[in-house]
Image (cartoon, rainbow, N blue to C red; front, side, top):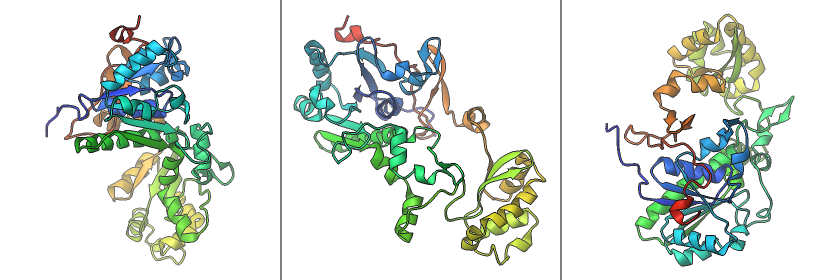
Length: 378
């Protein structure tokens, strides 16, 4: 297979009005696959995430990770001269991404209707907490508020601790990812003759629509699913378990795999046990089955148990911390990180391969206003 190819979005020009995470993540992964991203930032201050820690050598590592490969232009959109520069750029661009609160873009005169009059083929993506319309559309939103209101938090955590957020800002990340998918789709439609398109991505919509297991339980049982910790709400054994030297995961979702698990543990007697004969029974008697499994696991280290199980085809895994995952041989083989020109902070590359080629940028995030002189700004 070819190892190199032209990035799929080569030649596409994106104006990035967004800040912090959802919008910048969207434009970063589009930039990875070839689009030129010009980040429009407020003079002297820039994107708020430039001021979010952690910092290294005075620069935000957080900002660096999600603004890789972009250029930066300082524009005060309340200034008529700067607004004219923006309009000139609109005429030459393919995509605009913004994540203002609904109504702000219109007040700044950079809304979809305004830019569509300048460029009738523009693709304009708006990312917000609750969308461009609806009873909550004007409310501010952070990832934690959307996790709380989407129902995701209600099924995350343990009964003794109560609801908790997922340990990453997945509402922002997935909203940005869906926005990138929608933009790519709109670009394809434009190739088939479509005119300007306004894409409306709401974090709430994204997080609610992604909960397939929970929604299946809700629609089937007419009752909201509840917290089950690390367990699967339907299949058992499917949880974290204690081995001799730490925690590991075992995931068994059918009777055949359960029989293989029992044979691996030399516990054939459990296969047709009256408490564990079916998945439904195993879930009902989860605590008893966990005790039986951990009696075997406590005789083995995590690595030993994983070797036994995986070699027999039973899904199992150690619980790695982030450093272990980053430094793993799997991560290295998949080229999940790349060296950045001009920075010792690695680039977190987009994860998709095209014909075994991984398209990504090599330039670190831009200094504020690095491209000012290219657009007539002092």
